[in-house]
Image 1 (cartoon, rainbow, N blue to C red):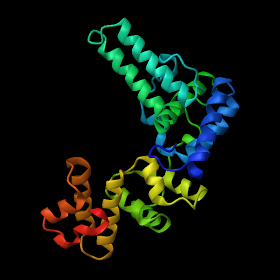
Image 2: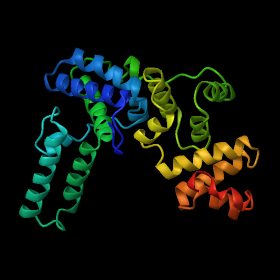
Image 3: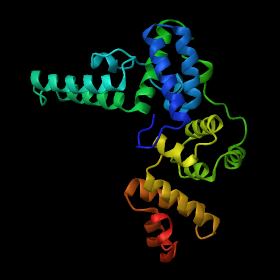
Image 4: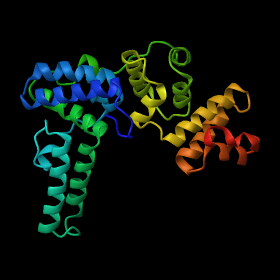
Length: 267
């Protein structure tokens, strides 16, 4: 699901194969095939779907039907159908009078054209379909969709994360950029493809932009050097993500960092 111009790595290739298999099984109404493949996808991307108990139990909007597609349509077919649907809608309707329908159409095209968003949509829709087929319990509980039960104290969990995963992941979690599902996703992906760098996984998932990644790397360096504290790092990252102020600039303007450090990592 590479979206940033980088060459597909093992994670991307694996996900492309699994996504194609999921959609083919879904189109063929093969419940067993859907469950087997969905389990593997949820192990790789547990951040793309939440347990049913944490969300409203409503019927997902059929985005494929909205664009006149089947669920196993190729990405090129999705793009073509989206362009045709938008053009047809604008020719047959006054957009101002049917603005909500028009925006729904735009959203459908955007979601299905983005690999990660499309997979997230598919997993929600597949779960609903499995419920209709009575292939899973009415609660929507499947082994790979069960909430992760943490029996250890939070402090112990944080310690384990900091030991088993790169420091970048720990810092992102501390800054509330990612949560436990994203940490689990990165953990599983690292186990599957240890040759893929953590930076590449973070960027391909869209957890951070390239500039934000540089800021977190700078934060890691400054923390190791004892030049800033964790609370200062968290505040500065909040400034960057929510206020548009680069982390280094935030640290300097608050008097927490000397100006000469600014040249690190392009800050």
